[in-house]
Amino acid sequence: MFFGDFYPRMDDKGRLALPAKFRDKLRDGMVIAKGQDRCLYVYPRAEFERIAAQLGKAQSTNSKVRNYARTLFGGADDQSADKQGRIVIKAALREYAGLSRDCAVIGVNDKVEIWDAEAWRRFASEQEQHYVDFSDEFDLPE
Image 1: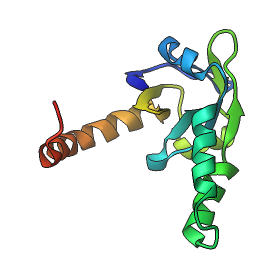
Image 2: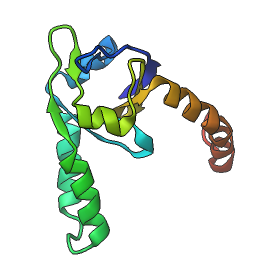
Image 3: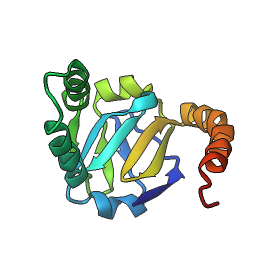
Image 4: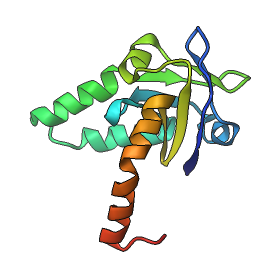
């Protein structure tokens, strides 16, 4: 399980240091893909393979399934962290997520999200009331 938020800086070569607490869970490799809300998803390789298998069971005659698969797999990048725990985010993915030097790395249960730090702060601020409302609506634990 991934949780917590961290604010590393990306260097000029597109390298970003992953938080130390996430590295062990990603040591067997990872896949970086376009996420929803203009962020990037970082999946442990096994989780990405599980998603791929599940998607493979979906009806490929459905255009929504095909388009989702094209977006997910077409932009995905296979990665392993270097000795300093850094990954290289390819230019197309950096552009998709609007990443600047200052990034936010967010643990979200089964995956990690990478956001532009300012975009994450805006999103998190906008979602605060929805978080409260959702918790009340579904009687989730506090």
